[in-house]
Image (cartoon, helix red, strand yellow):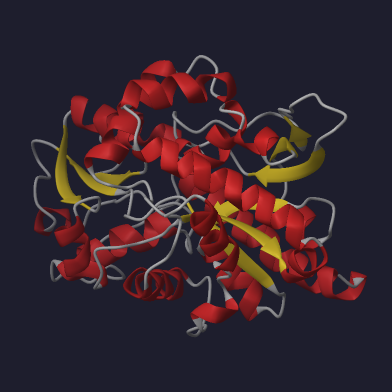
Length: 356
């Protein structure tokens, strides 16, 4: 990418990193590693081709990408995976600059940089249903209507959790701009803030965080993981939030490598579909040290609510919901054709190879 183009994109990338890191990466279940580029996990081999995969945090919602490594599927495809957790900057920037090969992000990020003029493609979606909930502090705030005039935790002003709680409030007949106050609150502080009476409600961003909120007096106002509840608000039962992407330039110059990586991830998706919660947790633990309890809760919730993608693909209704939420969050200003955002041809090839 030309230096001038990258410089023009950096302000947008920095702003978006704050959205994603605050909204999705700061729960107890998803912990970033200190330092700008750290936590590299590699398979030692001189015969394998190394690829660098950046991430904002280590989240179970990208499970198939990590399983491709821990189960040896990357190695089977001739790939050595180097996961780099990036803090203090945008994890997508190294991919755009050609310093990393693949990025793990939310669907919003590729849409944002596409609107800004950068060519990237989503190769795999690891989730197929919306993972957030909306929790009120009981016993006083047990309905959305009871939140009128109250403080409801958001993330950044344009973050997906903020858009989610605003959409849920609006769907219940309140004006989210007039009837509630939505300050920025860091996700790890949600439980304490509700217990102290600082906030009346907040989003639950993972299965584990939702359980912790409910155990500390929270009341479920809207369960976005429930497809019918989510469809009532966003118009779709599907929502492919967690994704892996690469630049068009990298894809065009390295089609065989891209195919090998996507095939390995497809194998991991296939294995995940057929495995129990305990088996998935055991396979993930090498990359999620000291987080077994959290993983058991969140992986089981992901299975109970069909949050994990079963084929890595997006749906039209899911993409339309992503466009709607991204516009509400201020990440994009207009609709973007799906063909400018997705390239699932490598995934099609992978499933054909695997006989699916």
